[in-house]
Image (cartoon, rainbow, N blue to C red; front, side, top):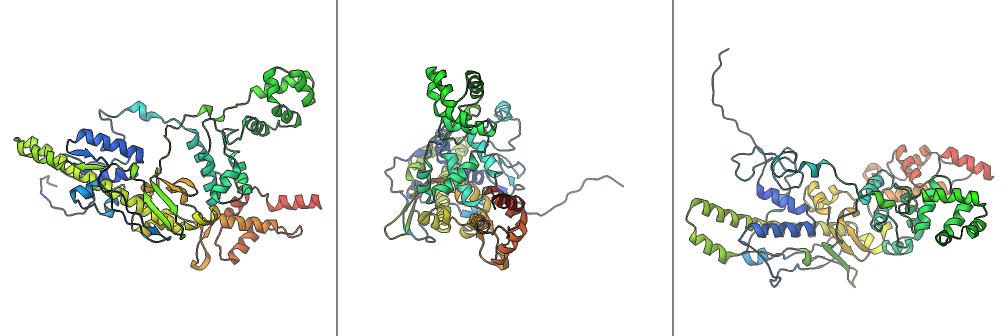
Length: 500
């Protein structure tokens, strides 16, 4: 076979992510703090970008909306000052990992996408001059991230998961929960028993002692795990101040033990940790500033608006651009000025579209979860990214970016947008899906009503639920039952037989 050179033409299609599109996607996933830092850096690099002084008429318009109404937004000094068309909403939709990037200075779509969010272009694992291997070698685990990882595996779903996430938010730097359950119950629109039940599950997380209400409670949780919490230990925890005063004789009398036993108890107490969060990195995140405000109006409708204080006000300095453009001589100078002008334009457009996208997604979340704002946490509906994405005509990955690190201030508190997404149980014959929490409570009600001679097995519970149009697997029933701390049918029969 002869070896020869040949020219061939091939036609194909590929999606090229331009640097501007990468910037738009990156801006969408930034928090308001990160966005402000990014804009400041761009102002330092680009002499044509000017920070607005807030005097422009660029505040968002807010309409009263009822569930599925739309709130229009007239945003941005960029639109008011430069009459720029905002990028299309589908500009954020280039999300396939197989897409190619055409970075600055590249002649073809050959570079890889920077999916890491570092904004340095190319692969995040590359070894360029800016790559710091040591800083990427490992990441310190914070108490919050450690607890959230355990929450995902705890079996808590739906409303319970929502409550547990709120309890994690209430923890202080030591790992204690100082907020009273009654206060959380009132805020979320549920009862104290519900909060206490979820709190009991959370107190089983590692490190032991987390979610305690006080030092005594923290030590008691650790002693219970070691099976060393008895009346003598309980009496000691109730009188810890006597240890500080050195009144060991009086403490021994109160605990009903001799000096030798008291010494052993004190040794056990010293082995416990009064600060459950001591071994974890502190959260570096500042105080949460909401991106969206939701307020209920007197007519029962909701007003949704962006927090204008968190929106960077950016202008294109056209006067300076005209002056500089007139004195450029070399091709490099002209290219630099032209590039600065294009980058300024796109930054303004991207900021405008980012705000519109956040508001649009927030409106849909309010429409889907309006019951929560009226009746409380028990009215949360099953919701996933796809449902919101279909409603607002965007990609699921876009919704994921919008709902991460974005917070909503509501009459019931401040929540991250992703909190409003919960699991659902499908219905038989295509009916309306059921909330996982609603199914969980139905299982609990069935077991509470069972007779001593007719204890329901998990298979029988599945049959009854399917008779009500709920399509659920046996292992799911078992998981929900265990999350409610309900014994198996065999154990319940034994308990009922002993009590009879």
